[in-house]
Image 1 (tube, rainbow over the protein chains, first blue to last red):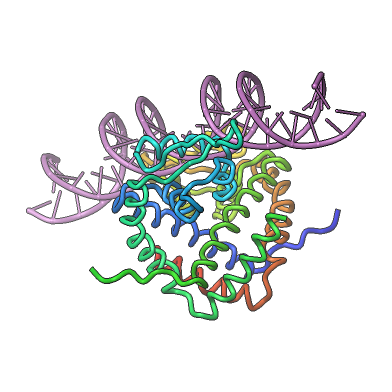
Image 2: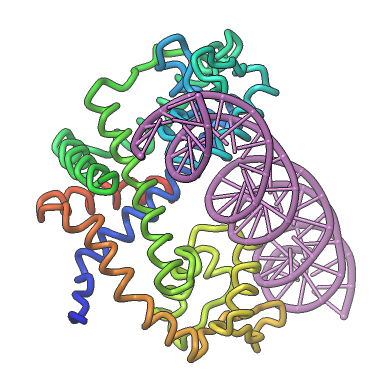
Length: 151
Length: 151
DNA sequence: ATGACATTGTTGCGCGGTCAACTATTCCCG
DNA sequence: CGGGAATAGTTGACCGCGCAACAATGTCAT
């Protein structure tokens, strides 16, 4: 086997800064949403996906794909959101196995309530610290990484 | 309250690419470590922290701080690693409340076994897609973000 | 010295997530 | 058509994590 090419100091530092900042960022966003709007970050993201979908509804599998989680995870999350009144399940008429998750009016309202604070936190913790150049590099680099990881 | 400054298209794209690539990356690293070495990513990182500490040991609280997780999380993780034989608990002699988590020889061996594959995966999924310029921007930007989030 | 307060590590509890198994349905090829 | 294979969504079992409560110990002003 080929000899391992270890990370040099600069790579190490990059890796650690990225990992640790990301961990802290997610924690901060989760806390902000939870305390200010009573939604978890993952639930918030599901609501966002639904709000951007045509008819404010998505197949369960598409919701799983969009959020990069498992199907069982989506099943349980949608049940949770349904109990909160923010989403309802609607049967597919063209596929009798299928289920849509559909945003309710209350769900849309909750999203509208939560969004400003969330966007503010994203700015405060991330974009306020990125120059235009930084942002372009981050965008391009992570877009390539995502494409590779999806490939 | 001030009007919300929403994310423009470029910011949206940056945010999504970063978030989704990161999610996929962590999943990929976790899977690689789990299948190739039988360690979770979080456990691997704890072993790394211990291996870098003087005497291959760290106070429980310091391990919690270093890994940005809760103390109870570290308590349970160390119990897990102890059961695997990779870590042992050692009482502090200067603080009778204190506990050290200390890397065992088996733990060091496991780390040595797992590290090359892990580093390879980090290269394959991340650094291979970053130019030197990309990397510098990522390093600086996330270093600033981390500093802010720690402040 | 002593009493109030802080800190350390562990634990019970509950939440949220994955994996594997299962049922129901649809697809597709011979 | 018919029947095996693929797919959709749910569920049970299990795991890891955070929060709050707790006992044990240390700290510090008076």
